[in-house]
Image (tube, rainbow, N blue to C red; front, side, top):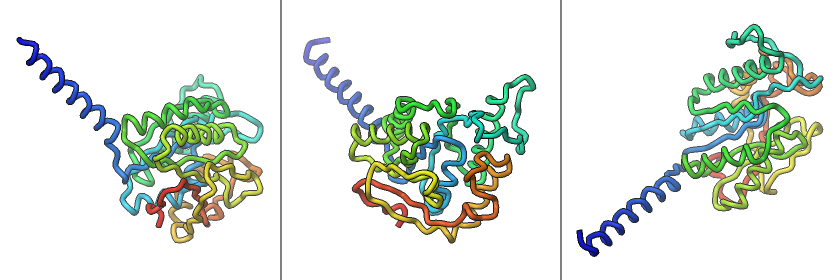
Length: 255
């Protein structure tokens, strides 16, 4: 095989490699939206109505639940195994609680008919920015997601890890779409949101009150976790608005 043939083959192979790598980075679909969730229930309390809007509008949602919610702090009580998740008899209380809370998240995914989700099982209260950033970057580079939703910073260490990871993503990939929601917008006196961007829209989800109540009831059935401000199952959680902070792009998916 002469030198010229080898050069041509080399160019062809490099071109194919470039096309492959380009397709991997650019296989995004504007209808693909990734939610990065610290704890089971964050998505429902902070954005349950918005999630319903996105689903009804034909968006394909993916969820990453980062922690198991296994903290046994005084305000985070033991929960009941309402949905009969499989639990080993010799399992300690923290791991037992983590399995039950992760299972409740899976029950919510069934209600909204979402099968594209992952649970990572990091310890509640110990989530790191690096762990969240790695998940988010892979979702962009490997899976083509260019729209991300997660929590604002608000003092909770796990929420803050998600906030900081989003901030790092924004610095590295400024052209992606970043959306944040405060968990307790309706109860803001508990936690003042610290968003990445000052732009926001308040989405009226009152019409989705029944849907959001149904989602929240899944969590409430495993018992009250935060007695001081965990909303009751009487529908208070269902009323809007839900606040969504966004960067300097169109937020057409919610219009």
